[in-house]
Length: 300
Image 1 (cartoon, rainbow, N blue to C red):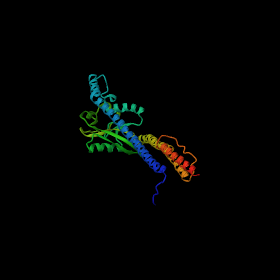
Image 2 (tube, rainbow, N blue to C red):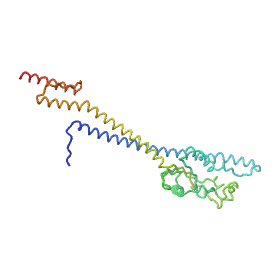
Image 3 (tube, helix red, strand yellow):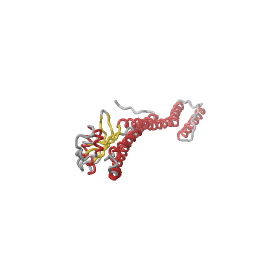
Image 4 (cartoon, rainbow, N blue to C red):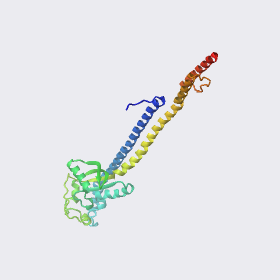
């Protein structure tokens, strides 16, 4: 079907402006929406990294400061204290998990798990997803892992840091015989952990619901995107209204007056005021009308 271009200058100017306004509004609106979603993803990842950094710092503090100090105190108090291991102060996993449990009350979307193969605490056994993450860290000799994983029908942001066995870990994680009696009494292990120095044995895993973060960002992005689109579309409509009042309507009036003059109807004046181009054109038409009227009056 052949396209028939509009004859009216109103539509020749208005349609392109309307098209540009719509396309620009949609384009910028979509960009705003996408930026909102992308920023939400980045923010979620940054929050997870902060949580993981906190976990690393807590574990390092226990290993490097708290545990050696407690060891000294226990050694100096030999015979006075029954315990040979203070779980709350010397276990980096227990210490970190306890603190993060309190943090989770303020940040319920975050979940931190310190998992490993052959752990002393059965609760720290990895589930299927966590086991795959540990396997990935082992196979790729990687220190960290991040990604979006589907679990139980929902998607989650996952960020994991590898737990590499150090010589100090073997005090508790090599054999039941060498394990502190306090740990044996608490967890009652039935087999030797047999961790190996230098091997990735587990991971500190922080997760966050993906859908919840994205849905919130999508709603915010949709609101902001529609707002931007509305601004662009509103500006376009405002320009069209201004053009209609200042250009298109006066031109249509001049067109009608010119047709009246051509038919010999020269009695009605052209009442278009203004000092702009349209106003000066109207003044020229008015002078032409007056001149034609004078000539017609002379010929009567």
